[in-house]
Length: 188
Image 1 (cartoon, rainbow, N blue to C red):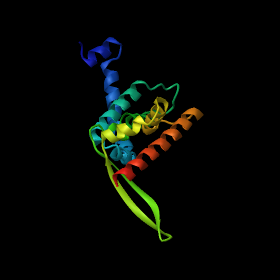
Image 2 (image 1 turned 90 degrees about the horizontal axis):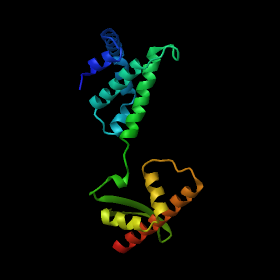
Image 3 (image 1 turned 135 degrees about the vertical axis):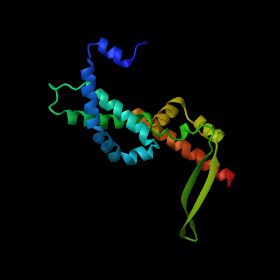
Image 4 (image 1 turned 60 degrees about the vertical axis):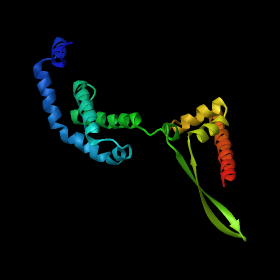
């Protein structure tokens, strides 16, 4: 296996081209850090390391510099900035949280605050119950395959667009509410 530089030279890329690209990369380093700063809340929410995001953005900047076509864009700066923002979106997609289904081996706590009435006056009662994997599996056993598939899609953040899928999602949510309502009554 040959080194990356040797492979590029065989493709017709000269050392001068690589040197020029690296000079632009140094020039646009502040743009990379600005992109990280602009998306800091997202990076923190996804619990990502800043250095890892920086490395991903440097690779995206290298690809943007290599693929720049002056016939399609007048500004190299704008091209690189757009590619960095697209890379942030790709990082978000790769690292999105996966809901309750992503918690293997963990105990999940559901907190329910319902309005109850005592002597005609509203009274709030907080009920806290631990649900482990067995209870979650029991809850999902209440659903048919279509409802479970649509519910998992919804939990993974996918948009449910078709009418039949939306109806399946509503049916699944109703079944789970009924299941957890019976579980709360049974345990309290």
